[in-house]
Image (cartoon, rainbow, N blue to C red; front, side, top):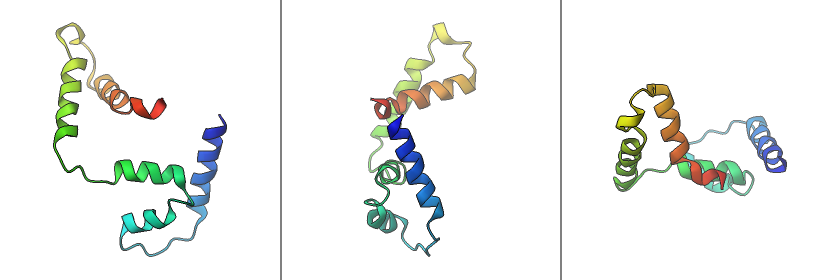
Length: 93
């Protein structure tokens, strides 16, 4: 619970910061990662570009494990959530 409050406070501080003209978003986050460490981790994860196709291939592999003949009645929304949770399970450890 304490970590969540810390992250929420960090996010609120980020939103209150004056909007700067940002030409290079990654340089901005590199300079701000000490101020917003948790948001910086998310930015590094989601704003980076994947140099290989391994991540997308593992997504297809995970999808084939989620959608089997025995699970053929799962709605697309549930399948999407299961894939999302499976892909981000490392964040909850």
